[in-house]
Length: 171
Image (cartoon, rainbow, N blue to C red; front, side):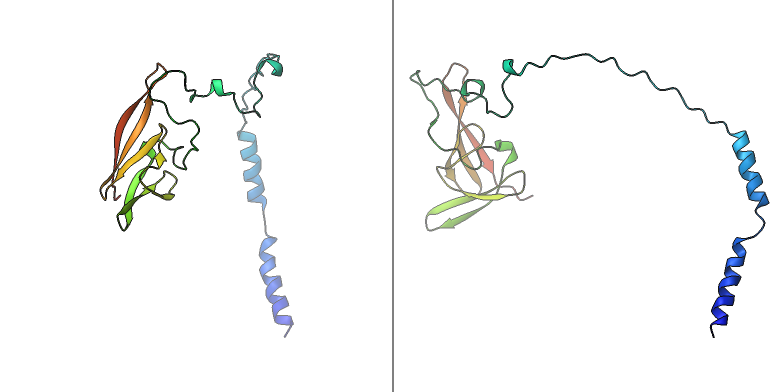
């Protein structure tokens, strides 16, 4: 019984040792006819030394000082100012354009809005909570929209109120 597989295997392997002269001729003629052209390398760019002086620059591991950030508020003026002592809300890092109203929840007389962020997270937001980049406070929540009052800097150190609405979207 073992003789049959050995004979079959030797028969199959015998096809691997045939006349390869035509294959060798093809390889030698192809190598002789084809001349590879390799373009020369581009010259390396000239090295320009840069003297890095870290003592003149801010360390990237230390947050910038309060004067360098955009939220510097002049509290010496007697005009409308945002509350600097208030802790920022979870949706105050998103622009209003990146937020969508997806629905509402209600219990008794209180209505909350379901707001979706650009990364797909959904938050329950109620009247008096803040969202948006410009200290936007939710003034009213209805089943169709959210009324928001934002504080916009006027450039002279004071802030003005602006009303915005966020409509319910069912996309």
